[in-house]
Image (cartoon, rainbow, N blue to C red; front, top):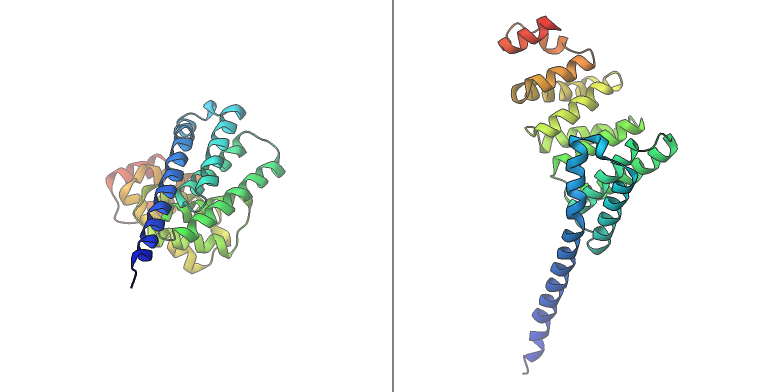
Length: 221
C-alpha cells in the first residue's frame, strides 16, 4: 500500500497554520497604533480627534478583515467604535457606532464567553443606548460570574447597575450589591465615589462595621 498520500494532510495543515500565523502577524502590526491611541485617549480625551480616530479605525478594520474570528481584535474594534461618541453630538450617529460596537462585542463574547470584560462592555453599551433589557441584565450576570475580582469589571458593573437600579428586580440588585461589596474591598475610594455619584452611599455608610477610611469618607459626604 502506498502511504505517501498521508503526508499531504499534515503538509496542508502546516501550510494552513503558516498562513494563519502570517495573517495574525499582519493584523498585529496594523493594530499597534490603535492600541496606543486608545491608551492615550483614556488618559487624555482631548487627544482624540477625527483624524486620529479614523487612523485607528482603519487600522483595526484591516486587522479584523485579516483575522475575523479573533475575539481580541473584535473587542478592539468595538472599543474604537465606542470612542466615536465623544466626537459627534449627533445622537443618531452615536447610536449607529454604538450598535456596531455592540455587534462586535457580541461576536467576541460568542468566541470567548469566559472573558468578563466583554460582558461588562456589552452591559455598558446597552446602558448608553438606553436598552435596559434582558440582554443587559444577562451581561451583568455573566461579567460578575466570570470576573468577580476584576477591578475594571467591578467599576463598569457598579456604574451600569446603579444607573439602571430602578429597573432591576431584587435578584439583580443583589448581584449589583455583591459586586459593590467586592469593589469596596479592592478599590474603596473609587467605589465610594461611584456610590456618591448615584446617591447610593447608604449602601455602605449605614453599615455598623466598616473600615475607618470608609467612615471618614461617609462623614465628609
